[in-house]
Amino acid sequence: MAAAAAIAANPLLNSSSPARPDNPAANRRNLPTAAPPPLTLLPRCRSLRDLSQVHAAAVKSGLNDDPLVLTKLITFCCLHPSSLSMAYARHLFDRMPPQQDPLLFNTMTRGYARTPTPSLAIGIFVLMLEHGVSPDGYTFPSLLKACAAGKLLPEGKQLHGAAAKLGFHGDPFVLPTLINLYADCGDLPAARRLFDQSDGGGSCAVCYNAMITACARRSLPGEALQLFRRMQAEGVKPTEVTVLSVLSSCAMLGSLELGRWVHGFAQNQGFLSSSSSSVKVATAVIDMYGKCGSLEDAAAVFRAMPERDTQVWSAMIIACALHGRSDLAVSFFREMQTQREEDGAAAGPDGVTFLGLLSACSHAGKVDEGLQLFRAMEDFAVSPETKHYGCVVDLLARAGRLREAHDFILNLSGENSSPVLWRTLLGACASHGDVELGKRVFARILDHDDSHGGDYVILSNLCAAAGRWEEARAVRKMMKEKGAGKTPGCSAIEVGGAVHEFFSGDGRHPQAAALRRMVEEMAEQLGYAPETAVVVHEGMTEEEKAASLRGHSEKLAMAFGLLNTPPGATLRIVKNLRVCKDCHAMAKLISAAFGREILLRDLNRFHHFKDGKCSCGDYW
DNA sequence: ATAGGGTTAG
Image 1: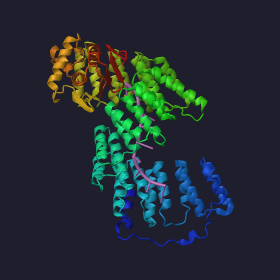
Image 2 (image 1 turned 90 degrees about the horizontal axis):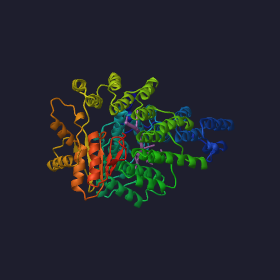
Image 3 (image 1 turned 45 degrees about the vertical axis):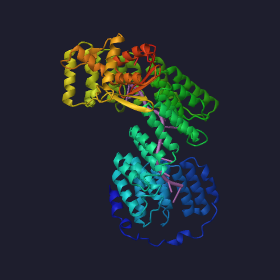
Image 4 (image 1 turned 120 degrees about the horizontal axis):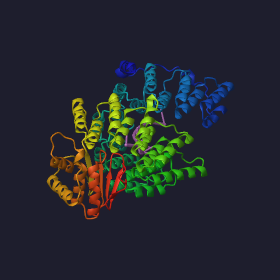
């Protein structure tokens, strides 16, 4: 805030003709035009130590504090920024004679923006203003990027104002960073206003990219895709970055048809070959196919890649995990190691790779294999984080080893114990019907966070399923008193390229009546017995409970799919919560009776129903 | 020298 005030108070930004004190031109005398010998070593520097040695050699050659030497060193540090190299750069920067050229200030700011240390970046800007150096077009992008990284909205707004006063706010390099600043600081409407008001309606591809990416990152895939369509309608050429965000939006929505089209588009544009970002685009394509239910397509794209980095291996392994294929996940992992043995420079696993592996073992019930991989992390110098511990808890608990999971959490140090771990355990207590442990775990969660409606629902259903109605009711009552909300269940299905959404008990859909009848008929004919025991609401009759189950969003989406797709077509459904037990049972029956494959993406994984069976083996 | 970017438990 002090920095913001300093920016606001600076006369440079408040007078119409900026102050330009005379430059003591003495610095520029007799500079050698070619780099002195020690400086030719700079490109080979790999560490701060190397740099200091070059500096020492320069000093020895009588180039002590020579502006050219200092500039070269500072530039080098800022091109390879780390907190150490930036500290060294700053040390040298402070020895530079006074300057008028913004170049070195910009260089320093860029280094700080990449580290990122926004307060130091702003410090350089303030210094610039104090020295009466006028910012140029290169000054603002780095500064704004630093503010976005540090979520410094007040400072960012000041810089926005400063850029506007100096006429740089509409600059094609500044505008996208401004959009990004507001988006990263959580003010999406402000970002959108800038985008809409910009000359030409945001007609530059990078502005579109900034806006589309912002939507994708805020989990607004629909908005992102709408912008993508508008971009194409306006004839703005999408770039690699555009397709990355668009693919990630397709992945969120589970829109296989659209995702496949974008894959083809990316291929036609050459985004998947011979470009520096082709590995990233391929990763996004693989992730999209994995999340849209086609593990085969994901693997085919992966196989076709000439080079693979850690992230693309991870994405492939995560796709296997989503589909419950721990066998494939592990075989990809082994292949990764084999490549590493053949080529020491090939990619190795990181924390994300292991998350994928652990979650794959968890989904497949491979407890011992999972624990083995967890212990193997050490051999790969990957240190486990809370997420990995969460996988281990899930691995043990889902398999019914509830006590072991419980003790595992207790033995973790403070910074790793989080209500989320207990929440994982609570879910497993529910699926294994352990009311006593469930109640104790629930109490632990409540110590930390009593606002999560899902926790109450799980415990209440657990009690109800065990016939302990009084306790179930008490938990529901507690939930009401705490005002804890539950996310409404929502399922989406893509039919003919359009995504249709259904909410639990949805009466708003144009086909609502037909869908209801369809679900009722199916319920009658499929010989399915509704699991009314899980419905805990005061004073409901059995029929009312059954009716409530029939209104679940997954069932509505399945009925819609059956009515609106040709016989035999695969149904692809995405749900925002875990699939309900009753719906899971019905999906199995539908897959057999109607001869349909049903791919249902859960909050956590895929359920692939075929011939009356589910790929999860009823283990989830 | 400046902008926008892929994978991440349950």
